[in-house]
Image 1 (tube, rainbow, N blue to C red):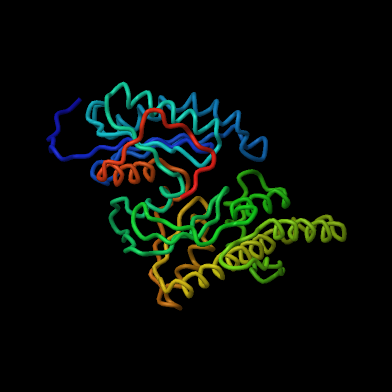
Image 2 (image 1 turned 90 degrees about the vertical axis):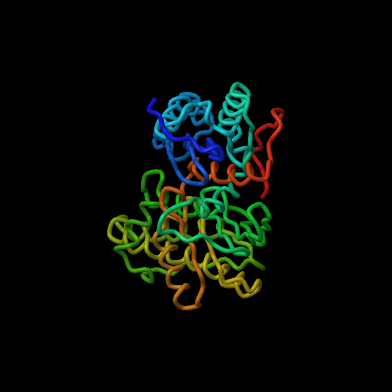
Length: 345
């Protein structure tokens, strides 16, 4: 290994993420990315969704090579790692167990601290990764975490002082995208395909209902049902309806979902008086949501913070940055810690 200058205060955090179907590892040095490796599992595509048992098996196959690659790309030795941060939850229990067990074993073997991380907090803290050209939000700010499993509005007072002020009462927004795509006969994962076709369609071609939910909470189960009934009705009258109107259908679905999210976000800004808004989670890669935030920034004078694409989907860099801030506070975990499928912010 080539010689490189060492600074006594360098903090190297190895982050491990295994909450769903991506096995990821990253190394950060003083908050800056040294490596960020993700192994995506292809096995689930044929089933139209993530199969938990297959996911945990794939994690077992991927975790050693992914971590080895992350450390090698960072150009450090294992003994230079200051601490290991891992996703404790929320997520699929079988997947979480693989990452948790490996992190505990490696930290124990190296004699270094172990740091547990809440996956949803990490999506928010991804905004604090040192990245050229990207500004960091000042506290307090509002974060909207949107993914296949979560839809939340969080008031962020400090790195680890967060309050959920709105969340879904049933399905998450990512589920609404993927289920709508499935109804249209698009392959899994369908959300990105809806986004792709939406960019070429008319967003007001078809009207879908927006659920009436009190406060800052969300609901998407009724929306999914409305899409299903609409498509069933139209295809009874014209079997080629989807093929003829795919781009307009996708544009109309995406337009309605973005409207649902933005209505609640505007309400949250009004109620809290906080106009700094950040997004995180896999669905924040959606171009419709990003464009709506850019528009809100100009129209309402919001300060909007949108992460790089690689920090939106599940990744270990966000786990490592959360670990970095916990390391500075000496918030270490006991080796008796266990994975938690449900793990609130």
